[in-house]
Image 1 (cartoon, rainbow, N blue to C red):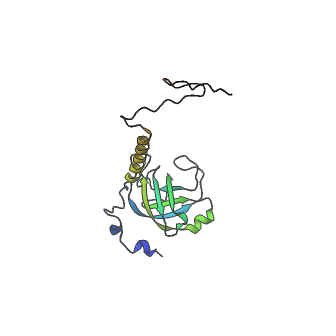
Image 2 (image 1 turned 120 degrees about the horizontal axis):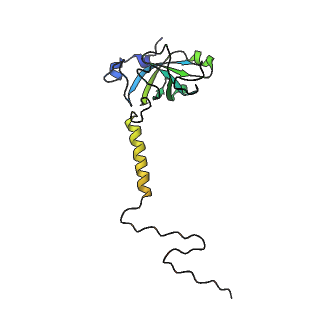
Image 3 (image 1 turned 180 degrees about the vertical axis):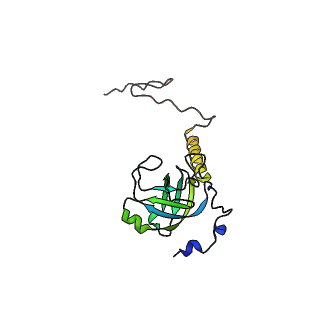
Length: 176
């Protein structure tokens, strides 16, 4: 039985410019189908299989892609790395790695809303909103640490036992 939340509207209304065979662009919101797997030690990308790893069709989501998944129930929501492929995964399908094979079987096949955060390993193929926020934060931090060009230079800090240049030494302390 199909979930009415995802089937009630045609995909052409949900996704503008819908083309099921075209690779998505960073920031695209897409409807996919998710399944789960539990077998295998090393992914196609050469890393150990672990929770948070997903397999996909490399023609749509190449290795290194980062996606955010939103299921009807919140248990499996989160950010996943596409680090694996599978012989039966074609088109708009994802296969999520799970440690427990019983849990993977119970997972079954579920509809999922997905946002592409990064496409492949290319850092320039990142969602514009994320990259802009990151760069603006770095620029704001560097501006806060720099002194304005017309501001006086900060006074030199003296180490214990040394006076800063041009300073008069303190008077000696005398006890009565």
